[in-house]
Length: 97
Image 1 (cartoon, rainbow, N blue to C red):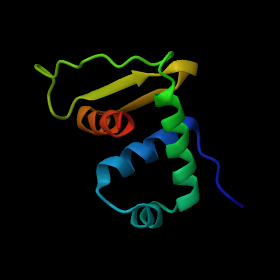
Image 2 (image 1 turned 90 degrees about the vertical axis):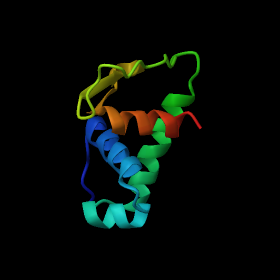
Image 3 (image 1 turned 45 degrees about the vertical axis):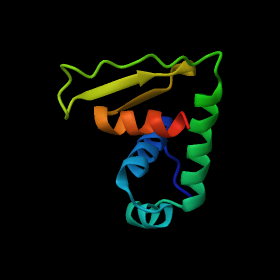
């Protein structure tokens, strides 16, 4: 039986994989999740980021933000992404490609 993860947990796995430098296979084995699940979650995040009418990226002034600061990004439909400023920066850069 497959384990169900909350949207927040799915987003967290995606953010951690993006910042890990690991292959999907390595990351999934280490975190005991299926590669297909990670792929599906990444596609969901990609769909959210490509809805240009509902998501507008604003420049982030990083001066005064410590490296280990926790940030939150609130997306449409109440999706909350929470993580370190470095992980979120990497996620936004990856999604904007």
